[in-house]
Length: 98
Image 1: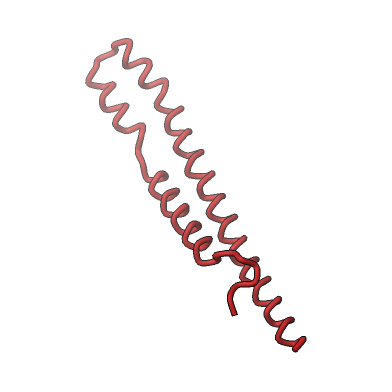
Image 2: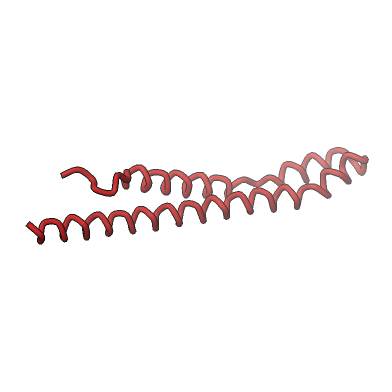
């Protein structure tokens, strides 16, 4: 019997795993380190001030992106679980009806 709910649960699970992996990769990015290193080499230029001022903003942006992707991964995994349980329940009910 094919899926009754017409949801590709494996694709949802794969999407969840991919989003989680990408979130982990983004979390591992040290965006501020290279900025601070380059700024130190520029010796108090105007570029240094702008770079240092933006380092935290960029770090926060990466952190926010990783968090949002992690939330999407969790939601997608939860949806896959719910669809899987619903599919199993419908199949069970149909088998019991015949």
